[in-house]
Image (tube, rainbow, N blue to C red; front, top):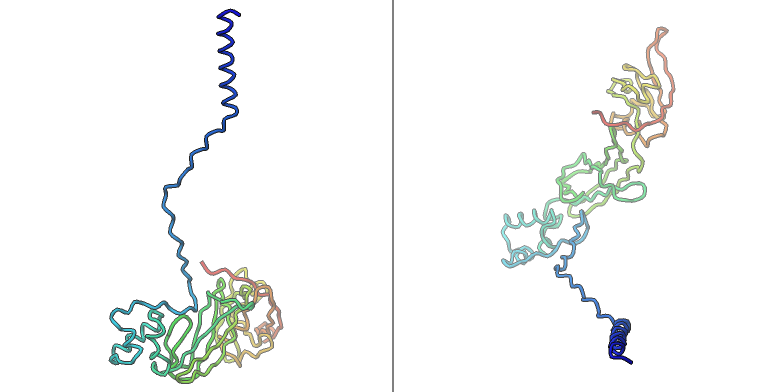
Amino acid sequence: MTVRRRAALGGLLLALGAVLAWWCWPAAPEPEVVDARPEPPPKRVVSRFTNAEPPVRDDEDGLFAEAASGELGEEMQERVCELCKVGMLDADACQLCEPDRIHGGILVVDVVDEQGRPAERARIWIQDCEFEPHGWREFIVKSGTCKVSAGRRDGALWAQAEPTEVDVPHGEESYVQLELQSARTGGLGVSIGPDAEGVRVVAVMPGTPAAEMGLEPGDLIVEVDGIDTTQIDLREFVRTMTGPEDTEVDFVVRYETEEGVEEEAITILRRYLEPAG
C-alpha cells in the first residue's frame, strides 16, 4: 500500500472515530437556571367584616392592664370604652365596658335574604327608643322598646323587611333578625299622598304599570290587597303596594265620572322601576 493511501486511510479512521465518539459520549447537562428574583411576600387577605376577636395590641404603657383592673380615672375609662365600641382594643381592655357600664343594653340586628345569606346592602331603621350606634349593626339602647325595620334600594324602590318590636333590657344583649326578599322589588309607578278617605294618587309616571292600567292623578285608593287604606299609614301602604317584581297586587280605586263616584277593582303586575335620571 502506498504512503498516500495509508495516510488517506488513517485520516478516514480518525474522522470515523470522532463521529463515533460524538455519538456515544453523553451530552453535557444543561446548566441549571437559577431565578435570582426574591420570593414574593405572602398575600395579605383583609376581610371586609368578621366576627373574630380584635387582635391584641402592644401594651407597653400598661393601658390595657389598667383598663382591665378599673384603676383608670372616669374620663380615661370613657375614652377606652369609646375605642372598644369600634373594635380598636382587645377583649381584656374592654371587660369593664359592658352594657351596664355604658348605661343601656346592646341591640344586635341581623339582616338576611330568603336564603339566610347576609344582606350587605341593607339599611336599618330604629324608632321609638333612645339609642346610639355601637358597631357594625349594633346599637346601645338607653331606653324604650325599639321598632326595628330594614330595607334595600332596588332601582327607584325599596325592598322592605317586616318591622318588629324588641325590648332591650338594661345591661343585657338582645338579638333580632330581619329578612328581605331575594328578588328585585317591583312597583306601580305612582306618587301618593295621605287622604282622610284613603290614599290619593298624586302623579302617575308614563310607561309604568299604573299608567297602563289607567290610574290618574286624583284617583283614591281605598283598598290594597284586602286592607282598608284608612287603617294604615303611608309607610305601611308602600310596603304592601311594593313586592317582588312580576307579582300581582289588588286595588280598589274610587274616582269621579260624569255619572258620579264609582269604584273599580283592578289587579296590577308589579314591575322593576329604574331610578329617575
